[in-house]
Amino acid sequence: MSMAARTQFHVLAVDDSLIDRMLIERLLKTSSFHVTVVDSGSKALEFLGLNENKKIRAETPSAASETHQVVEVNLIMTDYCMPGMTGYDLLRKIKESKSLKDIPVVIMSSENVPSRINRCLEEGAEEFFLKPVQQADLNKLKPHLMKGRVKEEEQVIEPINNKRKGMEESHSPEKTRAKI
Image 1 (cartoon, helix red, strand yellow):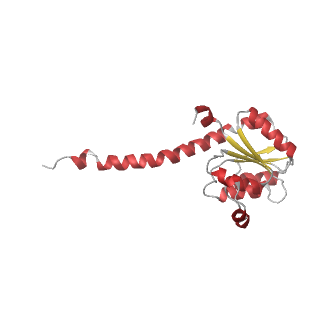
Image 2: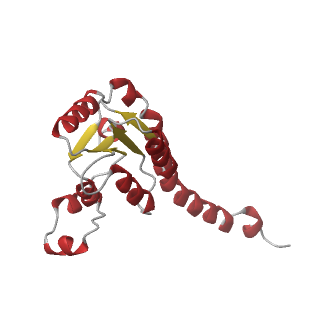
Image 3: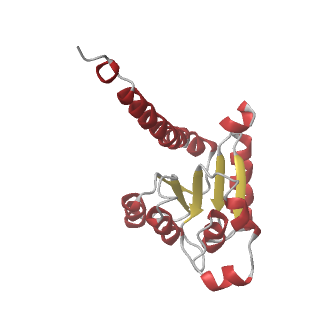
């Protein structure tokens, strides 16, 4: 994988409004993000490999489910108010998932409702952006993305360090020194 591909973050944008999806996609791509857009919470879960309707999944193999193993999502941006599954519902499902809970989630809404904003932040959303999303809002994403990248690297490094520690203990001078 090239260095440019490794440093490019992948954002999953979820919004039922075509215009809002196009706007957020353009803003994210302008900021050099790799972007995948879907129009519902259930399609987002399917893309992430968490399809709540197992029956449908068994009957129709999804290209998104197959892509899940290959594609890594670094951030999810979702509209709050969508038919079917709200952005809040999507947030809760992501935070309940062992494999997805560390992915930062940003909620977007055109309605400035303090109780809604607080509820989303308490449930684990990193940010709550009021629509229309601005370039300045996207600048707030970098720290959350970097925090996610550090967690990923720690998960990779920790097993290596544990293996190394075990090797050091078995080859330590105290254990290999000849007894007199």
